[in-house]
Image (tube, rainbow, N blue to C red; front, side, top):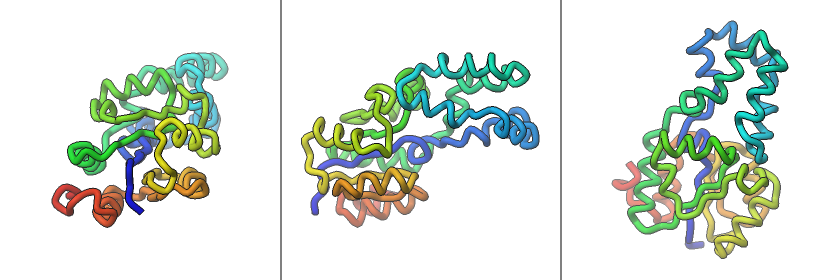
Length: 206
C-alpha cells in the first residue's frame, strides 16, 4: 500500500528522552536513584502531556518535596538539557523525506509550552507539515481519540499513513486503526523501513 504521509514520534525517535541520564550527570547515579524513588516525576509529567503547563506542574511538586526542590525545578528550568540530545541519523531521515516532497507529521506526547522550547533548541522540529502535540490537543497516546483526530485533520486514509514510535502501546493503538507502523528501536532500522517502502533511496537514508 503506498504511503501518503510519514508520522514521527519525537521522544527517543528524533531527540533523546532519558531524564535519568541527565540527572546522573548532574547529581550522580546514587542520588538520582533516591530522587526518582521518592518523587513521582514521570507520573506528574503525564499532566504536562495532557495539557498542563510545565511550570505549573514542576514548581508545586518542588514545594511538596522541598528537600529535592532544586533538582525538581531543573525539570523545568533545564528542559533543553533534559530532553536532549538529538538523534542525528533520524534527523537526516526527516530532512530527506521533506526534501523528497513526502508529507511529514509529528505525533507526540509533549507539553504545549515546552514543545516550542524544544523547537528553539532543535530547529528541525519546525519542519513538519502538521504537528499533533498532545498538550495542545489535550489528547494523549495511546488513547484512540488522538489517532482519530490525526485521520480527520489530515484526511489521509489510515492505511496510507506510516507511523514510527518507540513505545509498543502507541504502535499497537495505531495499528489497530489500520495505520502502517514501525516500532522504533534505532535509526538504522527506521532507515531500512523507509527504503523498503520506496520512500528513500539507500543513499538518501544513509
